[in-house]
Length: 142
Image 1 (cartoon, rainbow, N blue to C red):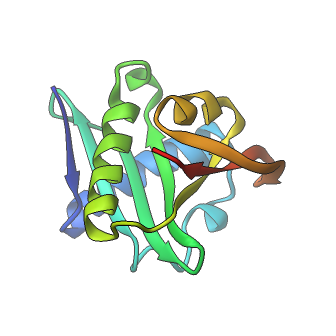
Image 2 (cartoon, rainbow, N blue to C red):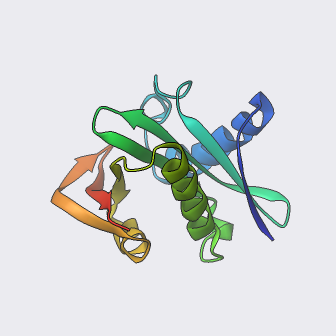
């Protein structure tokens, strides 16, 4: 019922961007110029579907601090249906296969911290604000 694929074409990328637009720009009021950045071309992007309907997106990229997981978004009507967990598990599997032994980290919004803790992440450092949203840096510990 939940399927995830690594994006290989412009149509799927546009669909993922539309999901991010709804979640981050419209729902969370993140400025559009902050949501889309210079890292889009180099990042590996993903699209999740639920019963064939596009409903989730994510990306990861290589940084000088390790592999950064970013832009995890699930449309409101598909939350609490295990979509986010399936996306995270698939992205982690891809990253670990492509970059075995690399440090994996993300910036988790405060309401998502416990979700990431359940999936093997631990907070590191103090809370910080990004785009007027409270976050914690989280490191994957397995």
